[in-house]
Length: 172
Image 1 (cartoon, rainbow, N blue to C red):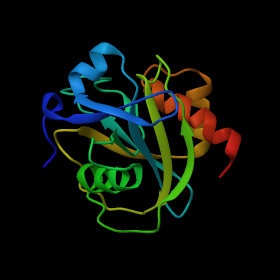
Image 2 (cartoon, one colour; image 1 turned 180 degrees about the vertical axis):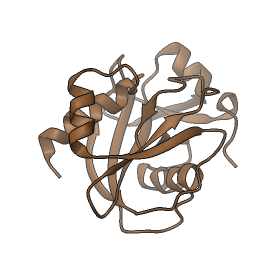
Image 3 (cartoon, helix red, strand yellow; image 1 turned 90 degrees about the vertical axis):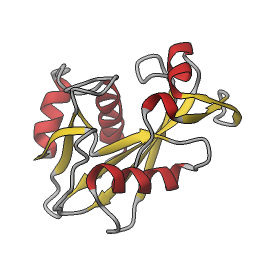
Image 4 (cartoon, helix red, strand yellow; image 1 turned 30 degrees about the horizontal axis):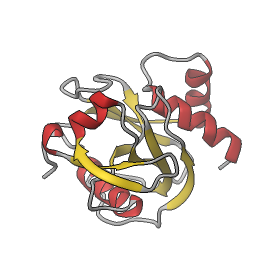
């Protein structure tokens, strides 16, 4: 089970993504320290992307649509292990097609000062959504998402919009 947000210990990193210490999640966010996160884009065989609607109980971006699975990289993890853990915890995916590393986004104020490593995986479901993390989920075509991101849809998280724009520059 995932620790409560105030109990999570994250690696604090420098501008080159080197670990320089550890700190509690709430302090990392309150202080604007650079840290690590993963986002996983789960596509089905027809090319649709599964998006999750974040729980209204989340402290950041409650009720907004976000990447298929995402989360912080815990202090004792690397990016790959964290991505596998998030797939398991949030969507109930134990194994599937291999994850493909797509790109990494640098930390900005808009993305919460996170180095975000983005992965792609193919999985057709079904999913077991983590009730404490996700209120809903649905499949969307890439064209639907393109239109929503281009319109700066406020129901999408800022980080998802950043990574989707980057996705558009690296292709499928």
